[in-house]
Length: 176
Ligand SMILES: [Zn+2]
Ligand SMILES: [Zn+2]
Image (cartoon, rainbow, N blue to C red; front, top):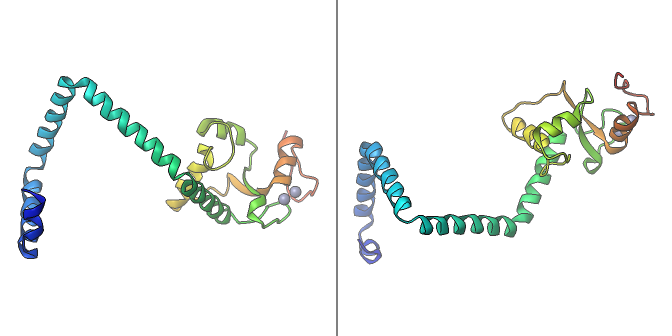
């Protein structure tokens, strides 16, 4: 069927045809899928270089897409980060700092490094860290781990990380 014949087809008939195709697909789903699988397998075996070229094209276009939409991703990650901080209380548990730009998620038991190593590549921001990304995903499912994580500002967080306590004295020192 050509595009032309589709475009002159009356609305109703087109809808009927679509419904019929859908029914047919539902009924023969497994056969169709098996056929497609075989077809692609055969194609792959017969045309390895075409297939490789196709995969390479897909890979490159994905990379180009990601590059072109980098700003969107950045924006999204920032928004998620803000939401995450808000969900975990939205202010420093030690000094009460509320400006989100100053806030980080802190591992209460001081095992943040282990956690970060486990989840991510060692850096500690959403976008580069699997650890915060994990928390974002959990938050979307409605899961928060407030017994394990809290919000601190960079100052208090740093004091805990380096000295094991914060001079504000509002929170107990990390046991060591
Ligand atoms: Zn603080
Ligand atoms: Zn403090």
